[in-house]
Length: 202
Image 1 (cartoon, rainbow, N blue to C red):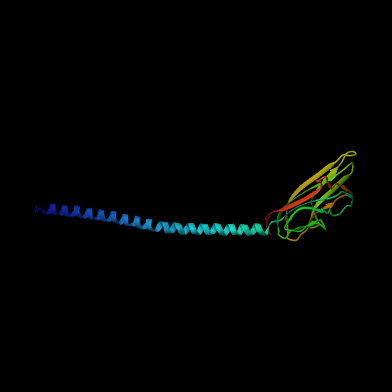
Image 2 (cartoon, rainbow, N blue to C red; image 1 turned 135 degrees about the vertical axis):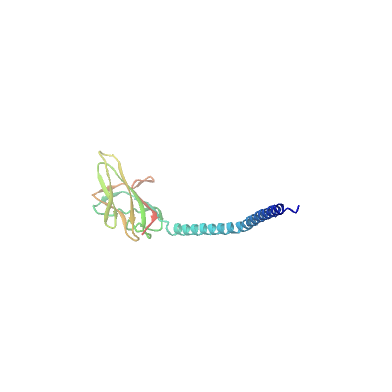
């Protein structure tokens, strides 16, 4: 039992076991510490994300509230003496959110710069031909034509455009030729003009 080699062997085994137990205990303490801090960190991240989502919703809500721009108008009666270059004054207003359309002048002037969608339809009766243009700030965007081939032949022309419109700049429908336009007949609004803001952009 007093063999020096045997004693050294016992000391080495005891030391190794102590180191292993200490390592396991330290690892366990680290895991416990991580578990204690994890819920607090997670809560902080969740609160930040929730706050960010609320800010985005508030921002989007403010955008939609301030940029509700859309209109839809029509002729209430027949235009018998439509002259070239004449504004078509759509006097019947179905919808005018944002108050951009002026029934007195037949002009749409938005209060927000952005990309807008416009669509219009013109109707005529008999053998007359009628042409109109969609105008923006004095320039032709596109046109529509309706032409009957014989007596009591009704025709309708339509067109659509997506364009950028600056705040306050006018958009309107203008006659490109002399002719006559059909209006409202039995709540069938044959000649119409509509538009809405697709998205805001300077």
